[in-house]
Image (cartoon, rainbow, N blue to C red; front, side, top):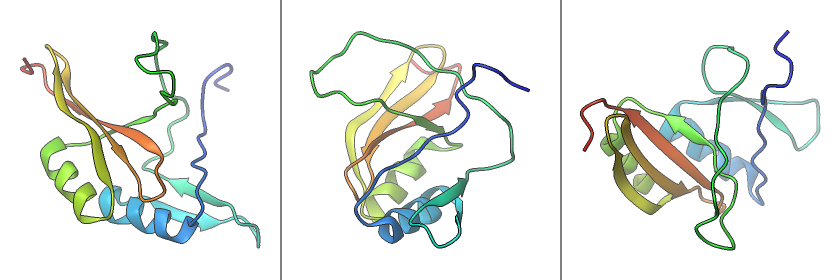
Length: 122
């Protein structure tokens, strides 16, 4: 058991079908409805419990909690986001010696991050 670990997320949205289609197209996530409820489990990859995160000083009073999704090619993912009714809200930026980070809005306006590992990022 992995006690005290964040192990689940929920993305609230007004149009679940539209939002699921976006994540299926861009990130290849799979969804399964829970009974007849308006609630769909997201399979984002192999089942590995828990995620790590951080606490930071707010940069804006309206700054939301943001989950970041690891991607193989951030530039390609940015293009897929824009082609699938999403929008980039914080452009790709280097995190020196670690990787690249950008933030986007899904079609329902929720903000998420995308992350590409790259020890050469400057």
